[in-house]
Image (cartoon, helix red, strand yellow):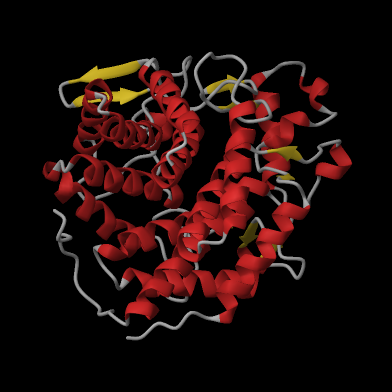
Length: 407
């Protein structure tokens, strides 16, 4: 099967890139409901905070302008854009992408959470869930690790000493997080005050520690990463899936968190050569590609339910499937279907991607920043670069899952 780079992918990237930059990296986010002018009416009650936040999030109509919710900056959105700019620079050598990436990294440095000495990042809004609430500036290992990987890529490309110091600072912040231990290993806490056992958070933290530990010759970071990955692999279900978390109220299996887990485990093995976890990676990917995608390319939100058709699932799927194409090249066909369907059905004329689609084809068209624009920009960029590479080398064949030569 031959792949040709299509105008559709390139045009889509150009349109969303211009939209994000035109809006100065600011838009809405799914969970920004607690910035509403109506929040005082919740009287600080956790349940009422949750109701307000979910009302704003789940409505197919954008209630935000009516509720006094304004577009906000997004640290994680900037992290994804940086990662994508670096990928664009790798492929094109265009110094404009280098300049944009460095500009975003400078912004992230200046906008780290003010609550911690070491580098870490949080939301720009308060959040409430069944597990409790946390405030803006309460850093989260998920965002910190994803942004940290952008710094790792930048340091590998440009060797800027300031980036090395920030990588070391991120490493210290993650190493200071609480851990929960058992006979299998340990689980890295979601944030300093929340030791909930959440696999994608712990595995993302471990992925960063492994890559940074290898780069910086930090044996303690490598040890922490190994114990965290072995813990989550020991908790993998027999079918290859992971629960979102180990607590009973976190027992669900969804698309994009599974993608986080797989990407993290892939990068951990690549950094450490810990082949003992290879079987968990393959089993997890087999479950992922078999359960989360419709034949026409629509990503399913849960392993057993399609709706809502969600932009985060699409963006993360493009990244995961492209990353794993070195193991199973046929995953690129699924990625192409996802990208094609999303561009045809969920990209507005002005370039922004829609948030979600509900049953009956009802689309939530409000512009999110990290959740739709930035994740999809990165995912499409990765797919576009991979297909460009294949087209240039004209060396592509469908294979079954196997171990890359480097292992």
